[in-house]
Amino acid sequence: MRLSARLLAASALSATLALSLAAAPALAQDARTIREAEQLRDRALRDNVAYELVSELTTRFGPRLAGSASEQGAARWGADKFREMGFDNVSIEEFPLALWTRGEARVEILAPFPQPLEAVALGGSIATPPEGLEGEAAIFETYQQLLDQPEGALAGKIAVVLQDTVQAQDGRGYGATSPVRGNGPTEAAKRGAIGYVLRSLGTHDHRFAHTGATRVGEGTVPAFAMSPPDAGQLRRIMAMTDAPVRMRLFSSAGFTADSHSQNVIGEVRGSGAADEVIVIGGHLDSWDLGAGAIDDGAGVAITAAALKLIEDMPRQPRRTLRLVWWGSEEVSQPPPAQGLTGARFYASSRAGEMAGHVAISESDFGAGRVYSLSLPAGAADTDFRRAAQAVLTPLGVLFDGSAATGGGPDTGPTVALGVPAFRLSQDGTDYFDTHHTADDVLDRIDPEAMDQNVAAWAAFLWLLANSDVDFRALTPAQ
Image 1 (cartoon, rainbow, N blue to C red):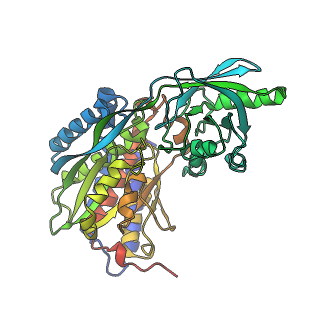
Image 2 (cartoon, rainbow, N blue to C red):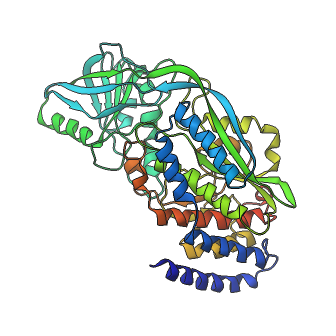
Image 3 (cartoon, rainbow, N blue to C red):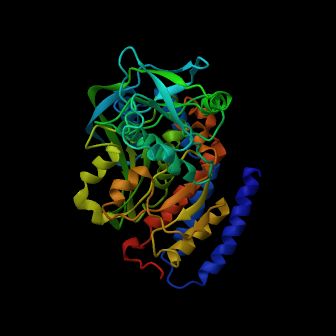
């Protein structure tokens, strides 16, 4: 559908929905606010800065591994952009970080059919000895089969898990297999393994591997992810012969220096209820294989573009909207820190301010179209939800009656302190085709889908910022 036709259809449907809302008592939003939200939505579809931002970010800085000079430079650039866009209270908040470096990695089959495998080291993984590691492969179709092995059963062996990641719109297949990567090396070490290899947590059949964080600290082993076709190759080898599979692993990965990461923060201050804060954003760091376009250049650009549209409005929102580009979401840290370092820093440094945080959410699932809105428990049967649905339905965004329990990974530490979350869920059907790979580049972003994201965020945030809805006070339906 051409843009002009889409806007006409959106306006017609929105007008129909507005008639039904007019009969509803005590709307949390007045008619003016709803009209302005519709205007923001339609303006975003015509013109916004999201694609320009993610294009410049990925072109100037490429990969932005947490604690690297590239991530730090991107943060300075981001703060300058915030000022150019007219945001208030722009700051860069630094926190210490151990810098992990990938180095080199090689995985190969020595017998019965010698050949190299396409593989990468997992983030946070330790190095092998300089000469590498050799051993018989203990190959499991599922992670549960590995867990079923008793202590000592894998002594001197290389544990290999071939479990597939199931494709799903909401990414639940990745959620189900993420422990294979996060906990697998530690569980393999408990059973005596000397190394660990898993099938990449990807939903494609191309020959590139996915990295991603694994647990770090004592009691783990060098860990790698191989491409999905190489997992298939191992399956065929096992079907062809009963001979043991021997493998060699080499990696020079490890934590190499003390560094720092940072959160970049900017606001559009509220007028009337400025102390009530709505937090949005994405994470600025990325893995080092690609350019971090879908993970999470898209998210930081979408939320910044939505806030810019609001900043350009003739009047200020009632509540303050705070944009956070979190640092160091991807790379785990040595204990006790582990992951989400920037998000933990944001929450812990503001632990006494959480009562003033109205809601939180982030965009961290690529640039696929938003298809549903989830609100905190108790918000389903409210005038606020009805107003939001009226404005978002023309974008193809439906209301999900399941309560939002989180707004994305970086929101977790703040949600744990009692801040309500909402979620604008994106279509992630093909997200894990490129997630954490060398193929995470700008070309994977559909600009029209990104515009739809900005439209949904800008319109919803305007409604929420100009409402008096208190998610904490809502009573969940029985």
